[in-house]
Length: 543
Image 1 (cartoon, one colour):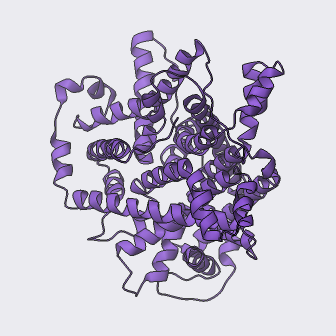
Image 2 (cartoon, helix red, strand yellow; image 1 turned 120 degrees about the horizontal axis):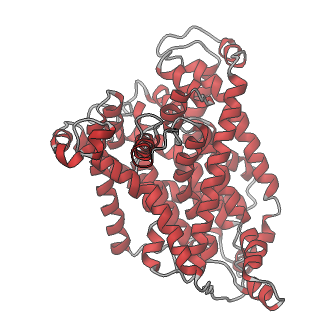
Image 3 (tube, one colour; image 1 turned 90 degrees about the horizontal axis):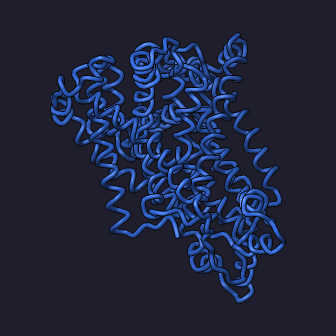
């Protein structure tokens, strides 16, 4: 079922790449799209920029996420409840809001930081440039941290400390033990997070369009977007997507080759153990400051910039710095009376909850089938489940539109839900896969020996051990779905509004202040919803 839902829009997208068909006007099969894409003189620089941008962002985000996960799970850092949540709050802010906030901060001429340094320190050189590759990697790398954190945290939470204790007994220092024992055992989960962040970077939309294009840094996905939005040529867009598919397949092959002996990384066995918190002495205060610094950069500072921008009639540096004199709630009044804002918020909240539950459950079942059963062709399931990562969400949305047009599903929340499921299923699959390979097969084998059926092994042995992973995946996919623009922008219609798309429309028509006001309202509701859910349902991400 899940495989069919994934293959259908992808198949129709691939089919359209070999035609000059526009919506409802078939012309016939042709290789023209591929000839135009592969003969583009900018294709090599675009691929190079795409790889540098995606790899840099993925490395920054995954390393920081792993460090934060280790601090939360294994150290005696003070303020555990607060430290546990601070790395997660940044994912609540929609990506487009972060890009706008950092553009206002780092813009070379009108940016807050450059003007502040010039006025207060006399520094005429424009130190910061929001429209550079390093700024792109910085902004998107910060957005990649939560995924690395959520992928690595369950690994450190279920880590058998006996190996570390053996190293200490043999005379190994704490830092050496951390680098030689602890982190290497987390390699499968680390690579899963890195590959997913890398693929997210390859197909990310907001940062390349808002920060890359103005600075002349064009990445490959920009061509896909231009082909869709300007030329409205789905065939050419999907032909450009073929290069992304090739890059994605190479990435996945590298991941599979690196983790082909994943059993040697297993840490959960039939032996009993208790996770041990490491006393890092005075460094625990440094660790707290490190987590707090990420919280400031990931959400607090961009949030303050958006709040101020939403309270002034328009943005410039002088107006921004003197906003109390120009304060106004007019932007909030207009947003709250927008005909689609409230309904879009309701739709996005309800649909995101459903999609998170369905997607995570389907991902765990498929991962269990791949790694714990001998079903013929199970590796094909892994390929099918990962395929959507190779397709930009806009292209997937177009495939779904072509698939359901003329049916009762067209312009319904069902179609939008299907799009979100296809887009986020690979994240659920990779997350579950990274956790399952860390659970030694001897636990399953013990159940098999005693005559258990697969459903007993799955629900009574494997699934209980995956509780931290399930909670993290539900949290992550819910947040990703509720702030999604890429998938929803082509699938919404009157009556099926989606909150983030409404905000995107504000930006598209140049109403930045209204968009900032809507983003602030959206973010406050999300923070409250997540905090209440954690308290009511006692979602636990740490020890």
